[in-house]
Image (cartoon, rainbow, N blue to C red):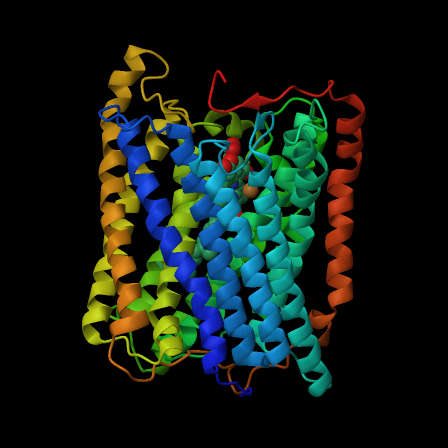
Length: 551
Ligand code: HAS
Ligand code: CU
C-alpha cells in the first residue's frame, strides 16, 4: 500500500535544523574530550592547565551520551512525523518550546561541569554530589523531551481521527513506541532527580539513599540505550530498503519487534546492578531472564534486514548464494554507513549478552570492557546509522545535494570511523578482560606488572581515539557543507513501501492500551518487591562526596 506523504515546509526545516546544529556542536566538543581521555589513559600525557580528568569525562558522557543523542533523535523523529502524519502550526510552535527548554537545560548543566562543580560522570551516581544547577538542567532536558513526546502522540492521534480505520504509517508507529518507552522510563530518573538529588544538593536533606538513586537511574538507563537504538532500527526497517531499491520485508514483523522492545526494555535495569549488594539475587536473576527476552526482537530485526537485502537482490536477477550481498550499493554512503553500524552490532550484541550473563558480569563489570561494549553499540551501531541519516536528511532540509564528492568523503568518514572504533574498542575489550578499570585516569592502577601488560592496549586506545577524532572533524566538515555550501538541489527523503501483496497488518498491533498495560505490568512485576525491600532494608543515607576531591 502506498501511503500519503507530507512535504517538510521551510519553517519546519528551520526547527529541525536547530536540533542538528546542537548535535554537531556536541559531536565536536564531546569528541575532543574523548580524544583527551584516551591520551591520558595511555599514561604518556597529562592534562594542561590543571584540567581534571573526571571533568572532561563528564563533559564527554553528558554531551555525547545524553545531549547529542537526545537532540538527534528528537530532530529525526519530528522529521519522520512531519513526513508521515503532518505537523500543525501550533504543534511546530510547541516543538520550539520543547527545543528551548532542552537547550536551556543543556546550557545550565554544561556550565556547571565546565566550572568544575559537577564532575559526577553521565550516570551522576550518589554519593558523588554535583551542583544543584547540574540536576535542574538535566530535569529541563527531560521535560523538553516530554514536550516533544506529547506533540508526537497528538500528531498520530489527529491523523488517526482523520483516517479512521486505517493503520498508522509504520514510521509514525515506531516513533510513538519509542516515545512511550522514553516517557515511562524517564519518569524514574525524574523522580530521583527532583525528589532526592536536587533537595540533597541544595543541602535541604543531609543524606541520600544511594541504592534507591542507582536503582531509579538504571530503571531509566537501560531503556535509555534502547531510546538510542530504536531510531536506528527505524532507519534499518523503513528507510534502508528504499535506499537499496527494495521494499519493507514485513510491516507486521517490524511493528511486533517494536512492541516487544517496548515491553522488554524497562524491567531489566538490574543487569547494570548485578554486583550491587542490597538487591535480592532472585530478582536480579528474574531481570536477567527478562534481559535475554530482548534478544528475540533483536534477532527478528537481523532476520528481517537480511531478508530485505536478499529479496531485493534476487528480484534484480542477481544469482548465486551470496551474489545479492556483493550487489548491495556499497558505494552509496546512505547505505554504507548504517550497514557498517549493523555489522558492528554483531560483536556489540554478543558483548551485551556476555555482560548480562549474571555471574559472567563479575568478570567484566567496571572494567574498560564495558566502555568497549558501549562504544561498539552506541558509538558505532547507533552513531554510524545517525551519520547515514545525516547524509540525506540535512540536504533534504536545506534544499541542497549530496554531491558525488561529498558522498566519497562520507565513505572515507565511515571507514575511518569503523577502523578507529575497531582499534579503540577492541583494545578496550581485551585490556578489560585483563582487569583494566573503567572511569579511571590511572592507567597503572593495579601495580607495575599489570601496567606493563596493559600498556600496548592503552596506546592502541589512544591511536583509535586519534583516528576517531579525525573522523569527527571530517563529519563536522561534511555537515557544514551539507547545511550551508553544497549546491542547491533536491535530495530524496527515502521511505520504503510495503510489498504490494503483503498480508494486512493485524489490527491488534495498534492496541496501544494493551501494550502499555503489559509494559507497566512487567515493570511492576520486576521492580515492586525488590524496591520495597531496598527501601525497607537499605542502610541509613550516605553523606555527600563533593568534587573536586578533597574539597
Ligand atoms: Fe549494553 C552496559 C547488556 C545492547 C549501551 N550498554 C552498557 C552501557 C551502555 C550500553 C552505554 O547486561 C554502559 C552503562 C554504564 O555506563 O555503566 N547491552 C546489553 C544487552 C544488549 C545490549 C543484553 N547496550 C546495548 C545497546 C546499547 C548499549 C544497543 C546502546 C545503543 N549492557 C548490557 C549490560 C551492561 C551494559 C549487562 C552492564 C555491564 C556492567 O557490568 O556495567 C542487547 O540488547 C544486545 C542484543 C543484540 C544482538 C545483536 C543482533 C545483531 C543485529 C545486527 C544485524 C546485522 C545485519 C547485517 C543484518 C543479539 C541486529 C549482517 C550482515 C552480515 C554480512 C553478517
Ligand atoms: Cu542495559
